[in-house]
Image 1 (cartoon, rainbow, N blue to C red):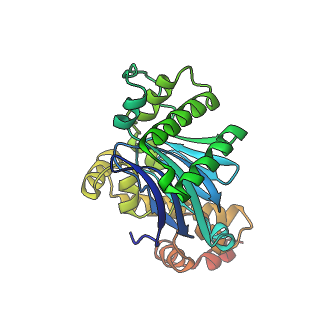
Image 2: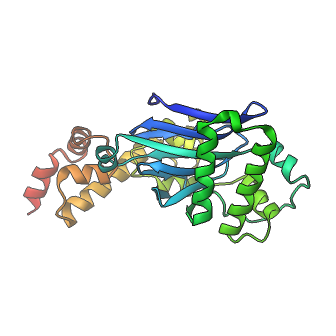
Length: 282
């Protein structure tokens, strides 16, 4: 997947990025750009975008922030968002277990909750003020010595713990760094009409393409391409017969990359164009 040019200003601690400002031209879809054992909190400075997780799609703008633990997901924009915003700008706080242990030295107890996968956090005044202080550091990196960086990370963890009403900082950290398990079939069904490529869908399932194809056949007794195309056509046909949407909107909602792709696949299955099929029924 070709990524758009990304401008990054950053503050590092022990060669790891802990605070950053990311500016990226408007894009269609990009994968998570974080390191493996890492959680993040992203303030939206400019623009709007979506996060596609295995189970849901969440919209983010300047009034809220993204809190995400380590797993595969995509940032996306709709055609309307791409027309409205030329760039998207984010200010991020990145968390790593080895650095956090310098601030909270006692390892947290293992907890069963995994609710902190991707959270949409509404910004209060304390978090907004914190964002401005991080932005000041990023723009003036000479101010950021090691002691200040650790103090700002500690401040962040305390603020987010209180914002999320978590019982303690250690419980919050346990949840944000605990592994996440997603059900394969549920991930597939939640993303059938997403226009994800098979490679992207495999990534969302945290699998290689070959493992994904094998797992898919074990679960559905057919190939992913055949199954997904069939479901997209079925949804498109239902929309054609039961809505007044334009063909272009139906193609988009059914997960096709373009009207031409939709028309070609529909013609292959039903031996008629979508409009001709509807006219003949009426």
